[in-house]
Length: 116
Length: 115
Image (cartoon, rainbow over all chains, first blue to last red; front, side, top):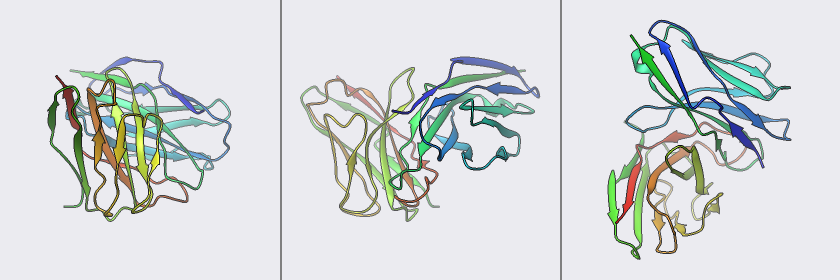
Protein backbone atom coordinates (compact mmCIF):
# COMPACT_ATOMS: atom_id res chain seq x y z
CA UNK A 1 0.00 0.00 0.00
CA UNK A 2 1.12 3.50 -0.72
CA UNK A 3 2.08 5.74 2.19
CA UNK A 4 2.72 9.45 2.42
CA UNK A 5 4.89 10.89 5.18
CA UNK A 6 5.11 14.49 6.32
CA UNK A 7 7.76 14.61 9.02
CA UNK A 8 7.23 18.23 10.06
CA UNK A 9 4.10 18.59 12.21
CA UNK A 10 4.61 22.35 12.48
CA UNK A 11 6.65 24.99 10.69
CA UNK A 12 6.99 28.72 11.16
CA UNK A 13 8.07 31.41 8.69
CA UNK A 14 8.31 35.15 8.81
CA UNK A 15 6.27 37.19 6.42
CA UNK A 16 8.04 37.69 3.05
CA UNK A 17 10.46 34.85 3.75
CA UNK A 18 10.67 31.44 2.07
CA UNK A 19 9.74 28.12 3.64
CA UNK A 20 9.95 24.53 2.44
CA UNK A 21 7.59 21.78 3.55
CA UNK A 22 8.75 18.20 3.18
CA UNK A 23 6.92 15.14 1.91
CA UNK A 24 8.08 11.64 1.11
CA UNK A 25 6.04 8.78 -0.26
CA UNK A 26 6.35 5.10 -0.84
CA UNK A 27 5.06 3.40 -3.97
CA UNK A 28 6.00 0.68 -6.41
CA UNK A 29 4.17 2.43 -9.23
CA UNK A 30 6.03 4.29 -11.95
CA UNK A 31 3.19 6.57 -13.00
CA UNK A 32 1.29 8.65 -10.48
CA UNK A 33 0.32 12.15 -9.47
CA UNK A 34 1.29 14.16 -6.41
CA UNK A 35 -0.61 17.05 -4.88
CA UNK A 36 -0.28 19.69 -2.21
CA UNK A 37 -3.52 20.82 -0.60
CA UNK A 38 -4.00 23.72 1.79
CA UNK A 39 -6.55 23.61 4.61
CA UNK A 40 -7.11 27.05 6.17
CA UNK A 41 -9.05 27.53 9.43
CA UNK A 42 -12.30 27.27 7.44
CA UNK A 43 -11.25 23.61 6.92
CA UNK A 44 -12.06 23.57 3.21
CA UNK A 45 -9.33 21.81 1.24
CA UNK A 46 -7.84 23.92 -1.54
CA UNK A 47 -5.52 22.61 -4.24
CA UNK A 48 -2.18 24.39 -4.20
CA UNK A 49 -0.20 22.54 -6.84
CA UNK A 50 0.05 19.19 -8.56
CA UNK A 51 2.84 17.23 -10.24
CA UNK A 52 2.67 14.41 -12.74
CA UNK A 53 5.38 11.84 -12.08
CA UNK A 54 6.22 11.43 -15.77
CA UNK A 55 7.12 15.12 -16.04
CA UNK A 56 10.68 15.96 -15.07
CA UNK A 57 10.00 19.66 -14.81
CA UNK A 58 8.96 20.83 -11.37
CA UNK A 59 5.49 22.38 -11.17
CA UNK A 60 5.13 26.06 -10.30
CA UNK A 61 2.07 28.13 -9.39
CA UNK A 62 2.94 31.76 -8.66
CA UNK A 63 4.69 31.79 -5.25
CA UNK A 64 4.39 28.02 -4.86
CA UNK A 65 6.80 25.55 -6.40
CA UNK A 66 7.78 21.95 -5.82
CA UNK A 67 11.02 20.03 -5.77
CA UNK A 68 10.11 16.62 -7.15
CA UNK A 69 12.81 13.97 -6.75
CA UNK A 70 11.34 10.78 -8.21
CA UNK A 71 14.23 8.47 -7.38
CA UNK A 72 14.24 9.66 -3.79
CA UNK A 73 10.41 9.65 -3.65
CA UNK A 74 10.46 13.16 -2.32
CA UNK A 75 8.00 15.98 -3.08
CA UNK A 76 8.65 19.19 -1.16
CA UNK A 77 6.67 22.43 -1.40
CA UNK A 78 8.42 25.79 -1.43
CA UNK A 79 6.46 28.91 -0.57
CA UNK A 80 8.21 32.14 -1.53
CA UNK A 81 7.39 35.61 -0.22
CA UNK A 82 5.19 34.12 2.51
CA UNK A 83 2.00 35.97 3.33
CA UNK A 84 -0.24 35.92 6.39
CA UNK A 85 -2.90 34.21 4.30
CA UNK A 86 -0.58 31.25 3.76
CA UNK A 87 -1.05 30.18 7.38
CA UNK A 88 -2.84 26.84 7.23
CA UNK A 89 -2.44 23.08 7.35
CA UNK A 90 -0.71 21.73 4.27
CA UNK A 91 -1.30 18.18 3.13
CA UNK A 92 0.73 16.20 0.65
CA UNK A 93 -1.26 13.61 -1.30
CA UNK A 94 -0.54 10.80 -3.74
CA UNK A 95 -2.74 9.31 -6.45
CA UNK A 96 -1.75 6.32 -8.55
CA UNK A 97 -2.59 6.08 -12.21
CA UNK A 98 -4.69 2.96 -12.15
CA UNK A 99 -7.36 3.77 -14.69
CA UNK A 100 -9.95 4.05 -11.95
CA UNK A 101 -11.06 6.93 -9.81
CA UNK A 102 -8.42 9.26 -8.46
CA UNK A 103 -7.98 7.72 -5.01
CA UNK A 104 -5.90 10.04 -2.88
CA UNK A 105 -3.64 8.98 -0.02
CA UNK A 106 -2.86 11.87 2.30
CA UNK A 107 -0.03 12.60 4.71
CA UNK A 108 -0.74 13.76 8.24
CA UNK A 109 -0.16 17.41 7.42
CA UNK A 110 2.14 20.28 8.36
CA UNK A 111 0.77 23.27 10.21
CA UNK A 112 2.36 26.45 8.85
CA UNK A 113 2.46 29.56 10.99
CA UNK A 114 3.31 32.90 9.40
CA UNK A 115 4.64 35.60 11.71
CA UNK A 116 5.12 39.32 11.23
CA UNK B 1 -21.20 29.75 -9.10
CA UNK B 2 -20.09 26.17 -9.58
CA UNK B 3 -19.06 24.26 -6.52
CA UNK B 4 -19.69 21.60 -3.93
CA UNK B 5 -22.08 22.08 -1.06
CA UNK B 6 -22.30 20.02 2.09
CA UNK B 7 -25.00 20.20 4.67
CA UNK B 8 -25.36 20.60 7.51
CA UNK B 9 -22.16 22.30 8.65
CA UNK B 10 -22.54 20.87 12.16
CA UNK B 11 -24.45 17.72 13.05
CA UNK B 12 -25.13 16.13 16.39
CA UNK B 13 -26.28 12.56 16.80
CA UNK B 14 -27.16 10.33 19.68
CA UNK B 15 -25.50 6.97 19.93
CA UNK B 16 -27.39 4.28 18.06
CA UNK B 17 -28.87 6.62 15.48
CA UNK B 18 -28.17 6.67 11.77
CA UNK B 19 -27.48 10.05 10.21
CA UNK B 20 -27.12 11.16 6.58
CA UNK B 21 -24.69 13.82 5.37
CA UNK B 22 -25.54 15.63 2.17
CA UNK B 23 -23.15 16.39 -0.69
CA UNK B 24 -24.22 18.16 -3.89
CA UNK B 25 -22.11 19.40 -6.79
CA UNK B 26 -22.98 21.45 -9.86
CA UNK B 27 -19.60 21.07 -11.56
CA UNK B 28 -20.87 18.31 -13.87
CA UNK B 29 -18.22 16.01 -12.42
CA UNK B 30 -18.57 12.27 -12.87
CA UNK B 31 -16.64 11.14 -9.80
CA UNK B 32 -17.42 11.88 -6.17
CA UNK B 33 -15.70 10.94 -2.92
CA UNK B 34 -16.19 10.92 0.82
CA UNK B 35 -13.30 11.41 3.25
CA UNK B 36 -13.04 11.40 7.00
CA UNK B 37 -10.59 13.62 8.91
CA UNK B 38 -9.60 13.06 12.52
CA UNK B 39 -7.39 15.34 14.63
CA UNK B 40 -3.72 14.95 13.79
CA UNK B 41 -4.44 12.78 10.79
CA UNK B 42 -4.79 13.27 7.11
CA UNK B 43 -7.92 12.49 5.19
CA UNK B 44 -8.98 8.87 4.77
CA UNK B 45 -11.19 7.65 1.95
CA UNK B 46 -14.55 6.17 2.94
CA UNK B 47 -16.36 5.60 -0.37
CA UNK B 48 -16.07 6.81 -3.94
CA UNK B 49 -18.23 6.75 -7.03
CA UNK B 50 -17.03 6.95 -10.61
CA UNK B 51 -20.46 7.14 -12.24
CA UNK B 52 -24.12 7.19 -11.33
CA UNK B 53 -25.46 3.99 -9.74
CA UNK B 54 -21.95 2.74 -9.03
CA UNK B 55 -19.71 3.13 -5.99
CA UNK B 56 -16.78 1.38 -4.32
CA UNK B 57 -15.48 1.05 -0.79
CA UNK B 58 -12.47 3.06 0.23
CA UNK B 59 -10.06 2.34 3.06
CA UNK B 60 -12.48 2.77 5.97
CA UNK B 61 -15.96 1.88 4.67
CA UNK B 62 -17.14 -0.15 7.66
CA UNK B 63 -20.13 1.47 9.35
CA UNK B 64 -20.89 3.75 6.39
CA UNK B 65 -23.16 3.51 3.36
CA UNK B 66 -23.67 5.65 0.25
CA UNK B 67 -25.90 5.98 -2.78
CA UNK B 68 -25.43 7.64 -6.16
CA UNK B 69 -28.81 7.96 -7.80
CA UNK B 70 -28.04 11.31 -9.42
CA UNK B 71 -24.85 12.68 -10.89
CA UNK B 72 -25.06 15.75 -8.68
CA UNK B 73 -25.61 14.00 -5.36
CA UNK B 74 -23.62 11.56 -3.22
CA UNK B 75 -25.09 11.28 0.29
CA UNK B 76 -23.23 9.48 3.06
CA UNK B 77 -25.04 7.63 5.84
CA UNK B 78 -23.21 7.06 9.08
CA UNK B 79 -24.81 4.03 10.64
CA UNK B 80 -24.96 2.90 14.24
CA UNK B 81 -22.40 0.25 13.33
CA UNK B 82 -19.70 2.93 13.01
CA UNK B 83 -17.94 2.67 16.35
CA UNK B 84 -16.30 6.09 16.44
CA UNK B 85 -18.22 8.42 14.13
CA UNK B 86 -17.24 11.76 15.64
CA UNK B 87 -15.08 13.40 12.96
CA UNK B 88 -14.96 15.98 10.18
CA UNK B 89 -16.35 14.68 6.90
CA UNK B 90 -15.32 16.07 3.53
CA UNK B 91 -16.91 15.43 0.17
CA UNK B 92 -15.01 15.90 -3.08
CA UNK B 93 -15.55 15.54 -6.79
CA UNK B 94 -13.41 15.23 -9.91
CA UNK B 95 -14.14 15.56 -13.60
CA UNK B 96 -13.87 11.90 -14.49
CA UNK B 97 -13.66 8.64 -12.70
CA UNK B 98 -11.20 6.99 -15.04
CA UNK B 99 -8.03 7.68 -16.96
CA UNK B 100 -5.34 9.86 -15.46
CA UNK B 101 -5.97 11.12 -11.93
CA UNK B 102 -7.97 14.30 -11.94
CA UNK B 103 -7.76 17.05 -9.40
CA UNK B 104 -10.31 16.65 -6.65
CA UNK B 105 -12.29 19.68 -5.51
CA UNK B 106 -13.60 19.69 -1.98
CA UNK B 107 -16.72 20.91 -0.22
CA UNK B 108 -16.66 22.88 3.06
CA UNK B 109 -17.18 19.78 5.22
CA UNK B 110 -19.57 18.60 7.93
CA UNK B 111 -18.56 18.26 11.56
CA UNK B 112 -20.36 15.27 13.10
CA UNK B 113 -20.45 14.88 16.86
CA UNK B 114 -21.95 11.86 18.60
CA UNK B 115 -23.35 12.68 22.01
